[in-house]
Length: 139
View (tube, rainbow, N blue to C red):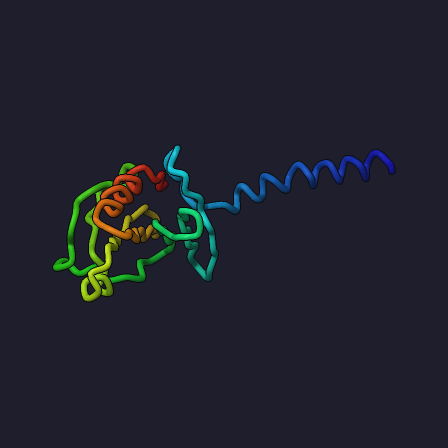
């Protein structure tokens, strides 16, 4: 194997992990959360699902325009996600079923939005997940 071929292979091997890290655009989860992201890219959006084992508990959709219409009558809690102040809303589907869900939209600037939602099994888990969502690093 000549030197140039070997240097080319090394350059590819070195560049590949960096490209993968750049492709992973899900925001950082709070340290010690024991959650992990499952990322799915679509046409003009990326969905990041924070999983507790196999169960989704928090979701973030990064997009150029929001896809949900939040109704003021469904506003529940005030809070924050990273440096952003938010109002959490109970989605319409959860109003009729009594499920413990919350959703909010964060305007990140430059036609960038993050739709964040929480799916909890009960009221205690809802409080825990909303607190955990505060530590998500949206930029």
